[in-house]
Structures are given as C-alpha cells and as structure tokens.
Length: 183
Image 1: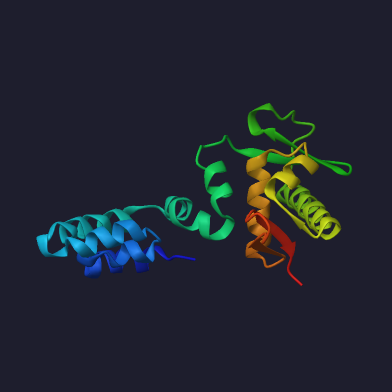
Image 2 (image 1 turned 90 degrees about the vertical axis):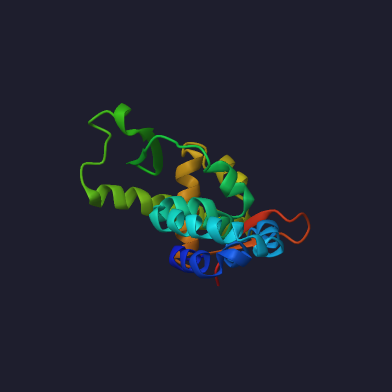
C-alpha cells in the first residue's frame, strides 16, 4: 500500500526525475519526467505535486492511489462517484440498507452496539458465502446479497481484507479479482 508521506517526499526530492510517479504506479509519467529532467520543468511540477500531495486528504489519496492496490480496477471504477451515506439496519436474519434520511425511527439502529451487530451480521454472511463458493467476485457478492447496496458491500469486503479474513487475488483463468478466505 502506498503512503502519502513517502509520495510527497519523493515528489519534493526526486520529482525532477519522476521518482514519485514511479512510486505511485504512474510509470508512463515517470518515464516522461525522466526524459525531460534536463528542462527543469519536471522539477517545478514535482515541487507543486509535493504540495498537492501534502494538502490532499488521506481518503482522497487512498481513492486515487490505493484502491487499485487493494481491490483492483473494478473497485476503483465503482467507488469513483460519491454515493450518499448508508446505514445497515438489522431486522431478524436480514441486513437491510437504507438512506439515513429515509429510515423510519422504528427501524433505525438506536445505538452503536446495534450498528456493530448489523455490520458483523453482514460480515458473517459474506464470509459464509466465500466459504461456500471458495472464491467470489464483487459481482457474485452483489448478486447473492441483493438487499445491500454495492458501496456498502464493497466497503465490508475491503474491511475484511484489511482484517485479514479475506485475501484478494486475481483468478488465473480470466484475471478477475476474487476474494478467498484467508486460511
């Protein structure tokens, strides 16, 4: 996973030769910077990019540079657009997602404990699905767990990967991103 501070330091000190571009996975831009380093234009742009990187929020940095590393192209494409905040409501065995503005008071989780229970129920459901199928894609999860919006499902998958319950790999046959239980 790429670090914002490392990218900013590389942009400041090695921006003229594109060191930060190579680090951030923008190889084409890195080569262009390296070719034109003698003009000092990449050096000036590197200083500006160092300032931009330092002032960028961690969430914006992660969306731009770390989403592909964690979840692959599919995740980057799906999380590009802002989606209104969602809440998971636990009703019996089902987790139902709804916009926070539209949740009737009787169904809204009253306490953080209720919210945690709903999140854990969805996590268990995802893990059981992965255990049953062996390996699943985001689309498989989305089709299996219909009542949960894609952005919430995706964030739960990312959290399960970070918590090391799931592994993210590419399927050998078609290159698709798949999730497997981390044994």
